[in-house]
Image (cartoon, rainbow, N blue to C red; front, side):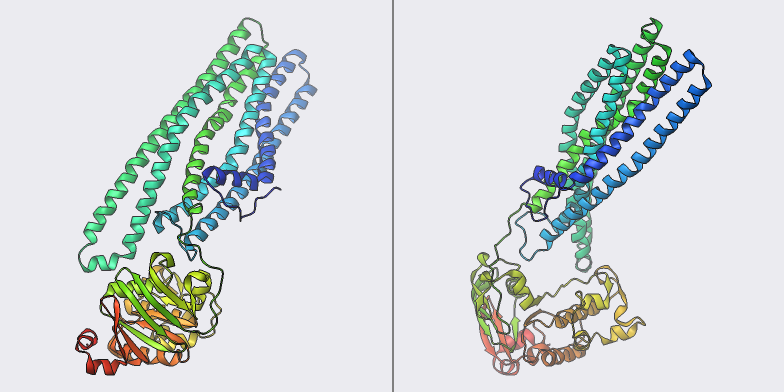
Length: 567
């Protein structure tokens, strides 16, 4: 079997289809042989039936009749087995190929440096599912197309042997039908591409709504958001109706043309039999083939539509797979241990931010403006490529732009304030890889012990999608436990305790300082408990570091700081 390595990079939708076809040449060859055998057997049935009638009427021999019935049994068995095993081979190859493309799209969507493509996560999800499946359908389409062609050619030859006019009628009629339908299939392709784009946008809108449902309810914006989704969904619905209309017109035209050809063959055969130019057996064969030929013709005429749909889906996948990365990461890895340095970074609300955290130090950043805190977290998390901001960020003395992004994230974990909670269990959320040796310590430090003790399953308690069966504080502590269990060299926490009460916050702050002793830790927060637990506090005001001292000294000497963090 010929295969194409998964590392081959497609440049367009056509490349994706070519890769899929080359990678499944073996399966498609076997599928084509078996499906061709199936179609040949189907075609042979009316031919054999005509021969039986011919010989029975001429010879009237019981032995010949028994032999003919046995021949029909062989044909029926061949048809049944070839269809079963042919479709099994093709559907396995189809499913496997769809899985490969889903993995490729997911890998592009989840890689550390995002692709430079204007698609939301919901749209990428649609491409990784529906478009991957429709692209892989090309593996079934080609063998079915060839096998249908075999059936039409066998029928044309058989009819041509009875009378040349019948064979020519089938060939000319098939060419005319495909010419008409190929024009209509182009409209299907353009309409399908537009429908896929609108459905993907609707899916992205749903994902955004689900993510922001709680805050939307908080300030009464849910109704406006729902109206916005209704508009997008209505556009998708109208386009779906348009596509359904085009598909309906295509299917109706194909059925009418196929029926017209079958009727033309039947009437022509009847006229020839009436004139005595063909025998009764040949008439029976012609009528049987005229009825049978509608199935391969229907399949044959449907293929252009499926090809256009597969091509439209492949072009949408190419949007993700061929998009260049936002930035090209360096090849190096940070040295173990080490500290963190932010040197004159300008990005968003940040204006020449400069500070250094020594190895093993616990530093808190008190950001007066949430936007500045979010921008700092985004820069440290490498969600903003190094070329998109001025200044430099250094990890263990090496600039982030010179390091592999995967290596940076293994070395430095930035836990956002809105970290996701996944469907699974408490344990799989805390330790997704299953390799952490500090799960128990992380659970205790994050004060998640009460959640674990509340359920008989303990850490194996089932968590619903997005933590729907947990409170806001429980979700936040679960996210903190995951960050602590990772035990990274450098840990950056962004507002890890905003949803917990003051007493719990005090305990968490002390636990973080104890658990992370000797490890570099940065907490971006306005929590007095965390600020007090830190070795020193950096004040981030108006985009720059304006003060630096311990929490208690700043409370005693800085009125603005006191007003900003005192509760």
